[in-house]
Length: 158
Image 1 (cartoon, rainbow, N blue to C red):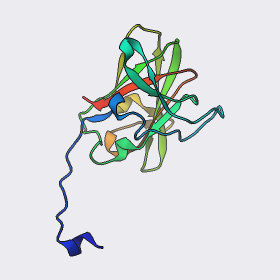
Image 2: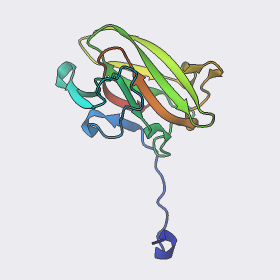
Image 3: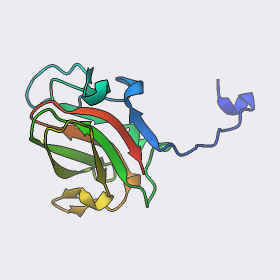
């Protein structure tokens, strides 16, 4: 069936600030690459205050959600990610832009805390050999890669 033959009008897209929170469980996350060859199973684990976050034994999480027009960041948006790491470690956050494609990266040092940590990112925080990410509208994937466990509780635009 062709929608136009049904006289169905297109629904207007509405911008959604909340990209992910732990109530969504495993939805919209996957393991796109697995450099350590570990299990790619995703799971929910409890962090501080018994709040859950998504994680993977491969220590890599990826989502295409930022490419969805409803979840695409606006030019003045900042990406906020709430994470927990039980160990001190460097965590890499990657954005793959769809136009070329180019992978942009940002490193953050996480230390063990007794609470969740909120990290904020602007497009120019993500760098590649060709320069900085200029805006959010070209994002294809968002990846989080670490050497040890990292729990992700939420991802949203602020």
